[in-house]
Length: 238
Ligand code: NI
Image (cartoon, rainbow, N blue to C red; front, side, top):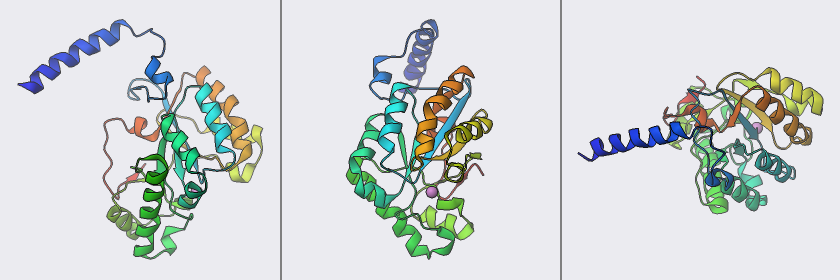
């Protein structure tokens, strides 16, 4: 019975939304609550920033806020411990925070128990800093294998890699990073960048402005996934 009522209400809400589709962004979106973007219907791109929080992350958050976009940060536990307020701000402003291990360990070289503790200590550091526990992890260097995936499954997290890497840590040049990032963009792509690279942070206003021209919505990894629920130990993109 309740399911039926909810379905009818759902249709009414959908009809209301359809009639106000040209409305400006809502107050709740401006306040940092993730606006619902349907990535099956509009062009989405997930920008992801690894290895922070760093001294440059605050400037990046300023740029993201003024452009009203949400991204995913894969944070390193020992950096979270150094800069908890930055992680708190990420969450408060509607960004997604994923787990990138405690000290950026190459997990294919770590023992099973080490993998689990690298992940659980980072889960706790993020929880202590920002009151949430990450729902995604990214293995440092993208280094995974069947054994690592099994250990990550024990820790209860799915693995998120990328569809395109800017190699920004190697380029170290704002123009080159901009060009590379834009060349990697495709609908529902996941782009790897680093908020420990100052040139990346400097490149962001230009990248976001060009993405807007191309009608892209910059979103979190979870927004790209939409209804799809990743299992613990599952790797995306596979
Ligand atoms: Ni990394």
